Length: 260
Image 1 (cartoon, rainbow, N blue to C red):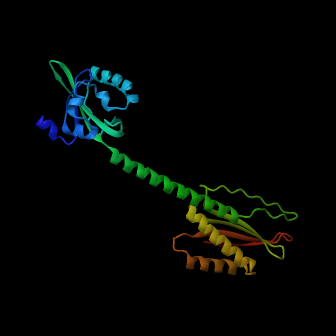
Image 2: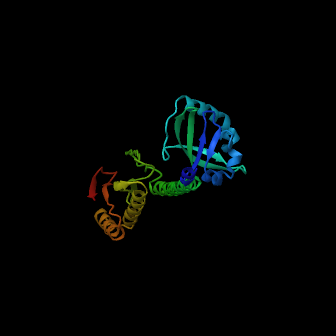
């Protein structure tokens, strides 16, 4: 008994019929019983009623083919205290053979704190996930707001666009900028990286470029000023590759600028 009571785990020894023969002091503390209240009863008394019938079947299968299962790789179950409180436990199990048959030795650990920590971590991950999803949705909306809603209709010309981001949001963008003199600027660009940072950087680059061109700057000056502004404001190591063509629909002439 002295050896049994020195173990840091709750220990219950049962016979081949599941009758409790020995419990240690840790078991009494964990489950709220005195040893005399448990001796002679089946081990299922330490479980919720809804699990007892099924456990009897598992116990019979174990007796037919006994094995050792160490703590740490044990099975997680639900224990039930004398007062009816249920709590998570981990069970390690071994056995011994004597002239009266098999004795089953169960080692029980209360894992309430561990499960609480695990649940807190799950909740934290879910919160982070929800936050990321909200940010992603916002970035997606920003991106859609930046991209042109309509393709310009110009007699004698047809334009078409197909835009498929690798993720929900990305750094690819396009634009049509119709000048007052009817010239059309066609913009195709790609921001390095994918996801929310690239989408926001895309919004910044697209807005800056359109603002300069709408203000009357030439393509060269507009892109130069956009590049200067982006270099001043960006600290994320992102950059944009861009192709911009200015088309004169009347003559069919076009000139372009490459930038990165």
